[in-house]
Image (cartoon, rainbow, N blue to C red; front, side):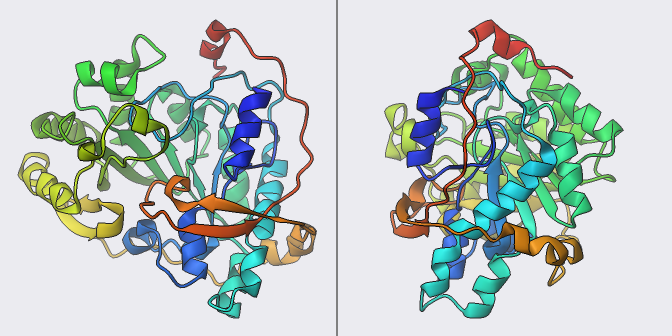
Length: 378
């Protein structure tokens, strides 16, 4: 991938664990360890924030250029494809090193810090379109073999990959389709797809999602932009009915990072705005508000609540205990990471310190021509 872009991401706190894969400490992981709060996914689904690895296996590529995205975009070819088993090992090693510094923080309970060294959950999102990684299914299967749960976020632009993962029994624990545009016109102007048939691809993925609720936990996440997409409640409802997800998240656009060049602070919805949107959406889509988290400006909707919504996790993973010594790698140095660009739910400007992980990097390949980016092998 592009060497300059890789260096820019490193300065933002990304730790590369392969050629095109990286881990970054989520702000809520740090906050959880410091006793300052948890991610909304812990409140909604039971995910333990201090034991969650935030990562991407495709930081080099996204087939949308969303105007509201706070991430910098720089598409380049995959080059050497990362090995799934090695990625799993490296992700855990990187997470342990990144969180090592919290062991000396007096506000971090020793028991909680010890637990963080044994991650239970992987959030495969962070950056890029992860379904573009040719060995994603194998990676998810490897994590499942080790006992880890996985949440995968996709923009739905590669429905063939989703179907392939289903056929091969490699679906994640929970799959999100992120949906920010309610109409084809807004999809083209807000999401700016790489593919000419991007809107049809999204609808195919939504239709597919409605068929797999017995095989995995299904989620549609709406990102609403005040004054741009928030008024299209009826159109959103029609798309939600196509996907019929078990869980529906409604979240405000956040005025952060690269998106500041395209939007204004007034385009953020207040939490009250989000709840009002949900109340208007509810009778049209057949969902109701189940929970919400004000600091993240997000609400969870379902047709009916379920006893299995809050996931249960083991205290320890047998395979991890067997292999844990190989994840202990010395580290040196510290760097500052801004919370505001650490994860989807962040709104704080607070700065935290985390250790720098020094990983050996492979030489990046030459940049591919733009048309080569369209050639994703299925």
